[in-house]
Length: 234
Image (cartoon, rainbow, N blue to C red; front, top):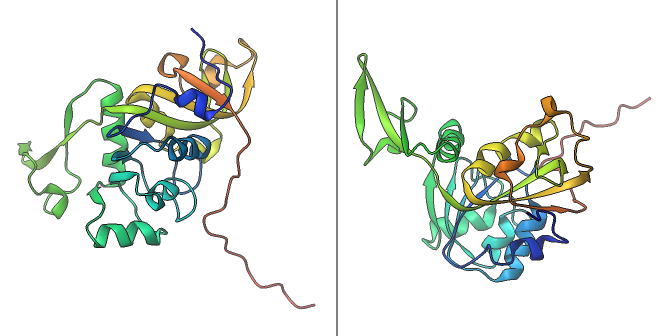
């Protein structure tokens, strides 16, 4: 099976359509599939639902799809740093399903493992629990959360071989692994594709069986917030 594609647009060919649910890796601007997000924008696909920790910033990450009104709903745990996200949500243009961060990660992992739902104590007694099934275990109340089963998963990795084995670099691993596993089709963009057999099997974070298409490209790697201290006077 051919897995390596020339660019993001080619990798998305036949894999993107209106109304899809897309699981996207990344945390803030760290480890986000920026090339694939740009290609989704160019595809013109509409009414998309994104399961992602956050929505990037106004002009980068999923934020570029908010600007073009291609996103119908966000399933997220953090929505700061994005004024357009806030504007669309408050005006009723954008649906939002809030998730505690760990719950969102577990919902993706559960979907990837074929688990339709699980019980968690997180969110009990809050608005998160409204409308969800409650059940007691050993005297403690839990709520039922459903696994996320996405039509498409897009992730960003550091290295890959041509079979799709992936290695993520440091904190860029974040949501990428659970997002990758819960999609019917997983497309990975990477910084480097290395020869088959050159990756240490013990260092592989995601086996190639989960990855259907791969592209290699150059990445901007923006810093979401830069904090510096004043230069000390001599």
